[in-house]
Length: 440
View 1: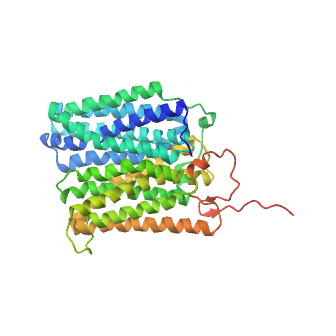
View 2: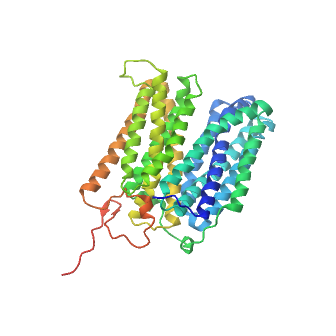
């Protein structure tokens, strides 16, 4: 596994990384400043809470659509259109303080946020598909690199935005950082290589339903959703138990730093990626036992335990999110889906959609649990869910091993190099295809 990239590949990863970083900054920018402005306009917490929630809901709904039609639209068009839309919406969001009246303000907030979500979903779906196509030998490593830049953007966004807010008020952070993303979009239009692949122009191909019918892919999707739920859970409830805003940087920082390591590990052919996902589940489960801490621990909330728990959560996030993408891609191709941009788009759309669904469900469920049983007991909910996913991953992989069939967790990098049909038996849906028999 080497990193001897061509000029085209270097251009691709540099452009997408810069765009991913700027995109994350803009996505993270609204949370620190918008609620204060909304309250000035007479909006309730429920109303501006829905403005944030609708973003994830729209991403969940439209990402599979983008993924299914990626081969028709073209990944570069979807990528450029997505970040241009997101950058423009970020700038427009900064002009909302000029809107007078409660109803016009909240209405425009919803409209801009929905359009921004559509652009963000397009950008993410296309970028993951481009990575899968351009880096067939290093899918997990390159995916992890993008996630590192995205994680850094989520940290830099509120920090830099706060400084600009103190200097120039509500509009300045959105104008400056939205313009930065817009410039990144223009740069990508000029620099990002165009895909030339006649196979990508096929009018039809596999559907999202056919992708999710593969049990191994469905398990990866479940892992992505559970990880996203755990992130949303902490965002909604951890602030009520800790006064330090630095707490929110720990797991994101650990995730950004550790993701490339998980990607490098997943790109090794000998590594079964569902085992990596299971390890991530164990990290998240252990982390939430400490963050609570769990009711059966005879101690109160301790700063060292929270920090250690968030560190473990960050490691688990990196393991699950990186391994789930490359595992789903490899499993999909091993199950018989075409080794083409169509399948890359479907898997990218699935990843983006399930992550958004978890981000929508997580804060909602955590709020209900927090009100009914408290923070310490509610952390057991995430602990149990990840424990269940870990057991499912292990049992699925062990079952495949014992059946002496092709391991569906084979490296995505190896599978993406296969141009012909697979000689080994593959798992399609819930049935095994036996190897061909020779006539006597």
